[in-house]
Length: 471
Image (tube, rainbow, N blue to C red; front, side, top):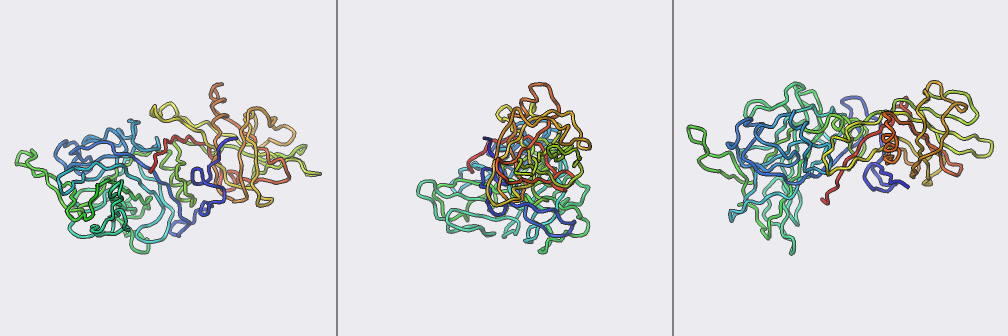
C-alpha cells in the first residue's frame, strides 16, 4: 500500500483545515492557503546582489540560506541553473539572506536555519486573497538597515516569550539548549507589476497592503506573503538589548573597507531573490494558495495537468468524457462497475535534481467517498494510453489490471496526493513519455468521486523532491 498525503504530509484524513475551496474572483477574500519550507544556513559573505550587485566584499556581513552559490554576482539565471540548495525542497533555489548576528561578548553566531511560510494572507490584514506566482528573478526587501525603533514588519521571539516587535529583554533560557531567538520578517506583497528589483533608498518595487489588505495605487499585483523566520541559538543570554546585527561597513574614498559596523536588533532586515523553479512558483500559487490548501511538504519540482479523463461504465457504450466528475465504484447488485481513466504526460526534470534528492511522482486529485463517512481503499492501475476521452466507453476501455498501487480516502472532499512512483517509473523504464491510469473503487458498495478537468478542480501529476528537515 502506498502512502497518501492529504494537504499536510502524513496528516490524517480527518485533519481540520485541509479542505479545499475554489478560488474567488480577484479582490475577494478567500480561504487560507499556505506552504512552508525550511532552509539550513549556507554561508557568510560581505556581499549583497540586490543593494550592491557585482561589488564583492563591500556590503555588510550577510548570512545566506537556500542557493549555495549566492554572492555579489548572482543573477536570476544563475539561481535557475545552479541546483545546489540548503532548502528541504529541491524546487527552491531562492537566495535568502539577512545580516549576521553578534553577541555582546563579540561572538558572531551563525543561524541554525530559516523557515519561510508562504501564504495568501495580505499581511497586516487578516484577509486572504488570490495571488499571482512570483515572477522569475524578482527581488524583495523588508526592514530598515538603519532602524532604531520597532518595525511592524519585523518580529522577535525568544525562549519563554511571545512574538513582539520590541527587542526581548526577558528570555527564559532552556537549561539544556539555552535561548533560541527567532527573527520574523514579512516581505511586501503588493508589486508594481513591472520592476523586478528595488532601488535602495529610492524606489520600492513592492509594498505592504493596508490594514484591510488593499494594495495601494501603482502596486496592483498581489504576490504570496513570504514570512521568513530565522532561528539562532544564543546560549544562556536573557536580555537581547545589546545583541547586534551587522551594518554596511565604513569605506574609504577608494571604496575599501575600513571598519565593520554593527547596529541593534532594530536594524533587522531580510532579502529575497526569487529562485523557485517556474513550475513550483505556479503550483504554489494555483494549487496551494489560491485553492486554500495547506500544502506543507508538497511542492511540484515540475508538473503537468491531466490531459484527458473520463468515467466508463461496464457494458455501457455511452461516452462520459465531458462530465464534470469522475466515478469509481465496483459492481453492486444491479449497478454496473464504474471506473475512472486519466491520461497525462510524464513531468520532466528528475534528471536535473541535485544528487541528494530522490523524485517521487505524485498524482493529485480532488474528491472523496460520496457514499458514507468511512475510509475506503481504492486501486490505481497503469493502463494503455491508446484511448481518447471523447470516444472511450465501457466496451473499448483498456483493461483495468496489471501493475497497481492502492491507497485510502474518506468522505472529505479535498485535494489529495497519491504516490504513483511505482507506475511512473515502470513507464519510464519502457521509454514512455505519457502514462494512463485506471482507478477502481472500493471492494464494497461505496462510490468515490473525483473532479474531472472539466469540473474546475482537475488533477495533476507532479514530481515532489523533498528531504525533510526536523524544524
